[in-house]
Image (cartoon, rainbow, N blue to C red; front, top):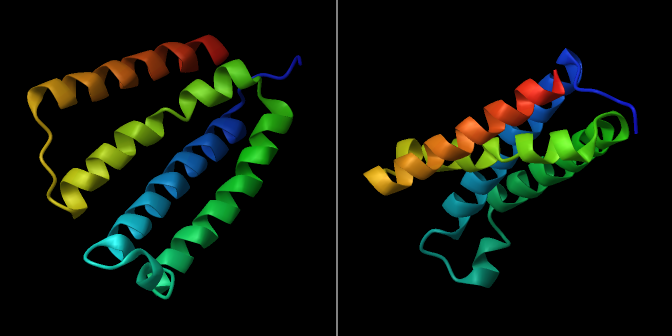
Length: 117
């Protein structure tokens, strides 16, 4: 594949990161204090599934034009975004070791992103 990371494709990857983060927040909120089968009846579960489907379509468009060696590592930003969402939305604790890991993932993503531009 001879494709490269263009600004529109970077935007689409960042949309995929956001969609994945929103999906996980929806699933976490829907699963809180509920039996597994009861979770299936919650609107947030289905909103998460909708984000999953939308992300699938966007990710397929990304993979059609961006090398996997660039696109997939950039999706690691979802780890950063999901950890931040957990801290802000659910008041989950992020200790120094966790924050260091998130920083290292972000640094690695920056290196990959700079390679693809």
